[in-house]
Length: 238
Image (cartoon, rainbow, N blue to C red; front, side):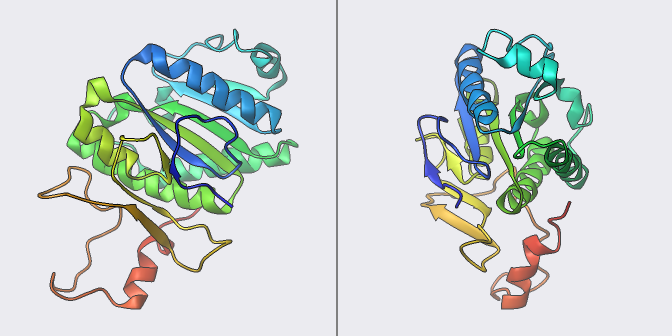
């Protein structure tokens, strides 16, 4: 079963967990990455660290990481892995991580664990809208397959409102980072397609917008049950 709610540590998270780690200074993030990936190695997962300008030896100070990297159990990627400049292509990125997860399993690992500082990918409203859709889609994949991830966002660079919008697309987040969370439901515990948790005092327009196409019915009309079910299931895929 996946965990949902608020956490102040990444220690002990499972093979399907998806956490947002909003941080206020870059130096606060790397130690959390080290803990998250070390737990993944201990659990038999292949682990990947993704960051802008990342170097292969960035985490070699973490106990066992250098040896794991030499053996192919740990990898360090530059953020260009998300497709370079411009908004991310949500569906293409989900397919890429799905392929990596299946390859990790084929190579004998328990699954895939990724820690990514995605801050440079969400600096504009357009980029955040695309990335919010990606977050929802990849969360649906993680709910079904053995992939776990920690998405890092620098609040000092993005601002509190933008960071909260992105944190709200995760089943797990740091306390006070967001009030409302929308994420994929766990198919092992419910037939629902998505879950909404928290409370909202929201007024106005979010720059992210919903992660699915807008319904075609008038605003006063509630979506039909079939429409509700089709929002994520029609888009989530490997």
